[in-house]
Amino acid sequence: MIELRHLTVGYGEKAVLSDINQSLEAGRLVCLLGSNGVGKSTLLRTLAGFQPPLAGKVLLEGKDLASLTLSERSKAVSVVLTERVEVPYMKVADLVGMGRSPYTGFFGTLTKEDNAIVSEAIEMVGIADLATRTIDTLSDGERQKAMLAKALAQQTPVILLDEPTAFLDFHAKISTLRLMLRLAHETGKIILMSTHDVEMALRLSDILWIVQQGQISTGTTASLDESGILRQFLGDEEVSYNETK
Amino acid sequence: MKDKYKLKLLAVAMVLLSIANVLWGSLDIPVKDVWQILCGKEIDGHPAWSIIVLQGRIPQMLTALFTGTALGTCGLLLQTAFRNPLAGPSILGIDAGANLGVAIVLLLLSGTATIGSLTIGGHLLVVTAAMIGALAIMALLMLLSRLLRSQVMLLITGVIISYVTSSIIQLLNYSATEQGVHSFVIWGMGNFASVGIERLPVFLVLSAIGLLLALLLIKPLDALLLGDRYAENLGIRIGRVRQMLLLVTGLLTATTTAFCGPIAFIGLAVPHLARLSLGTAWHKTLMPATMLIGANLALVCNLLSTLPRDGSIIPISVITPLIGAPVVLHVILKQKS
Image (cartoon, rainbow over all chains, first blue to last red; front, side, top):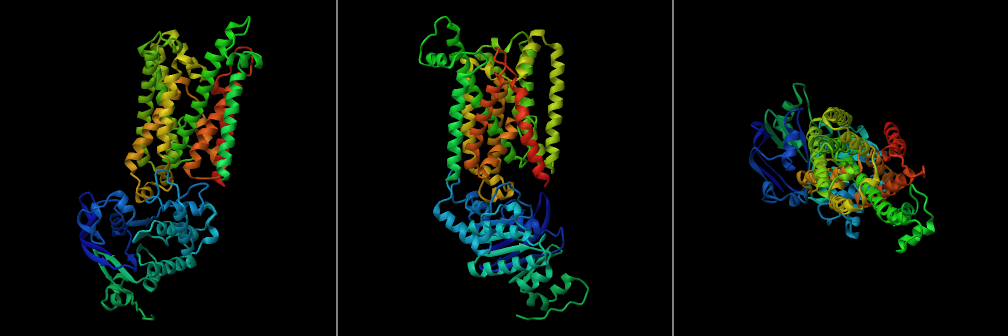
């Protein structure tokens, strides 16, 4: 479980989002929606511990994120970033194996147990047939799945993803989102991702975090529709959401 | 398993090349006589041969071996640290920094000193100056690499650094004595023989320290392949690792440059040869392979440098680009496709 208590994020003196109070239960896929520059990435970077909060705190299972050592943090939160990973000769299994770094010894050698966890992570995202391929031969969708498997191999209760569907084609977007929804439910992890694919997020997430005007509104798609926040977020157009679940 | 087999093969090649470097040199000494000398016997009528083999060829072989190892390792560290396949100690201007340090000592401070006549203390001064020069350039590059987004810009910066340092060195030449300039030019040709038996221990110890420190960086280097943010998320202390990288590449470049002169292309080409032959991105196998291939390549270059066989040698800096350039071209062409 993650709790955000009076959290203010931003750079230097400038707060992007102020006084956020939210909590997330385990086993949920959460989509973070909002226009560019509204502070989604800043929030994710703060939750990942890449930058300190300007005020307030982030609690992971009751522990203050800021009080964790780097090593403890690497076992608590894993990330999938927007930057493209390009490493010649690196195979999918190697990339996923990197996720074991917080647990391996001085030279980073993978044990039998580590390798079993890596194989399991690769299977969970459904790319077992690609395990020995080098990552430069993968499609964008396959690459994102490999990055997700890396995050799974890291065995953290929380996985943060910054626009993981951005460069994917339509089918890859849907299959990636479905995969994350399933993983959140099956593994009991909190998966929090930012995205611009609003329509898919409305359909396939457990919870939405909508960021606008320095505030975060949360709820299920249905509840946000009911309260009118969804309509406000999507603009002036008449938007209606039909409950189909 | 397969990788271990290849590493063993490279190690065997290194031993054979080392032996070859002792058996063959610029002067024609019969192999059986070299063997006799190694067994502790003097050759009748050729007392100088013992000195050539024991105090010339063996130190030269060890120098080549360690220089190749150090430069290859340096290139690997730089390519991973900057995530740039074309990074290397010479192209980034790090050895130019070391050059400048050496030039200041040789041309300005001790205008009449020649590299051969320097005492160990004098030599340590040259190494220290080279080290300061190399570290300064490395620190500058690390600062700039945060500002420069593009990989090409960093390489161009390195080239500019090289130009600026060579200008400064040219200017220093004006105020130096003729002997100082001569000594600097000779040093600039690159030579594995310039270490010699007296300075060998210092050279070996400094290189060995650098190489051992490099081995400690294997795990963080793997994580750095994914980028700083991912590495940090995997529990790697980026700041500390960068400082270590700075220190190790500075030490290795400075040591080899100060003792043997600037040797281009080995640092750039060797890590690629290692990747090509092993097909891996893991530093746990890549680094030993780079070290072994670097040693082998330098030993081959040293053998080639003695080819005239009339007592003269071809400068190392003439040979290494001929071997290194094709490898670099291959990498560039592969990147495009």
